[in-house]
Length: 160
Image 1 (tube, rainbow, N blue to C red):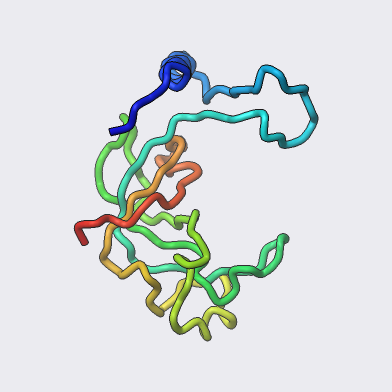
Image 2: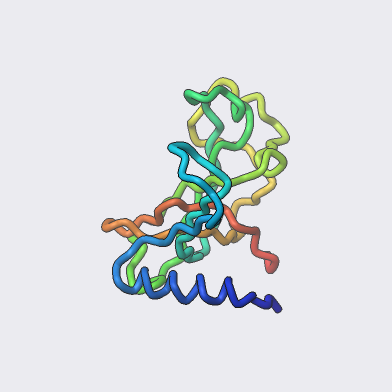
């Protein structure tokens, strides 16, 4: 059981109040910090997260990006078939979702030879996420088209 401190309870209540009025989230700042025009550890963005589940139907190979090719030969994204339903009052209309947010260990593929020749494409091999298994992911909100925004892997379902 998780026990929240008074500060965490107050922040959660304030976040709920802001989002119920149409706000996206809140920014928490260390009161002794100075403003700097860059990313700093004294500011913390807090947004509500929702979770949903999907069934693994495959994955894509990692590809080269403007930041390098760290994912070549590894799993780039997990392809999910979304569970039907109406989470948080809005229908998920997109049935296929490419999910990110994995560690390097989770991205490991036993036979990765195909990944170097087909970056970014759907893969035919097997990764540690077996086809047909269920995973839980988080997302911030649904787009107007019913697509989860900022979807990130949370955990494998333990009952598979």
